[in-house]
Length: 147
Image (tube, rainbow, N blue to C red; front, side):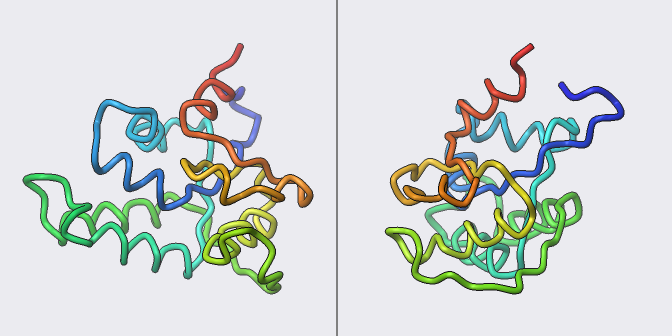
């Protein structure tokens, strides 16, 4: 855990992490999202990534049992309230194998993030050339909690 004077590490959460957390409370994705208020890291967000989160997470198949679209939207608004909203003034499309992930990489670079936390590691092949490492939620938790 960072010392009180150390700033939190900036990261970008790929949509796959939010979907995995919505589907299971047992995995690293849920644990990572449960740690957002811990100050070990700070999520960075752009308008386009937020729009993707909202579109994907409000699909019927991604809404956890017992929750409503409204409660999912409320949680997303919470994430926005604790995130660093980053403007992006450049585009490198296409850069990644999956062009839909270019906006995630652009956000990471613009916000000075060293990591994109994702379950889709192959989709971010080549991001390291821009100083951004794709990492799974479990591996990221190990990284930030390493003594």
